[in-house]
Length: 124
Image (cartoon, rainbow, N blue to C red; front, side):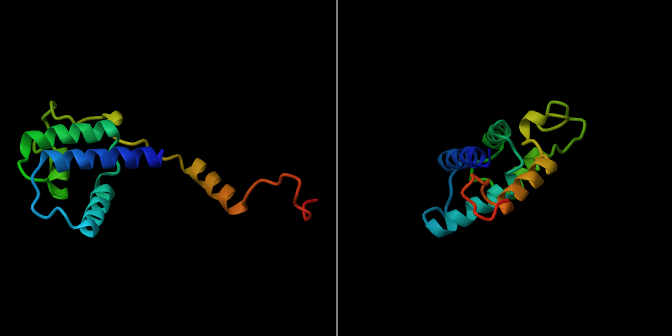
């Protein structure tokens, strides 16, 4: 799940690079840091949420959007703007919150190591 989400985010970031002008492109190391910061700030969006944000950015930006511009566009200026795509309960625009119990069980399984397949001489 995480891998597919990162892939969708990188595809969106590449779309933005094609759509919007940037003066500072070209430095590979800076690009990595930039993508990491954007991902950290926008990783709660589903692929559909990223597409919705891209549509809003195309309507409002000429140059490559800052993280603040992205976040500001997701928050309507008027809380009664019921036509705003991010206003109201729209879970399809966001990633589902991970199940804490499932995460804990996964963590325990990783700490315990691989399952015993009968080759462990110490097993009872």
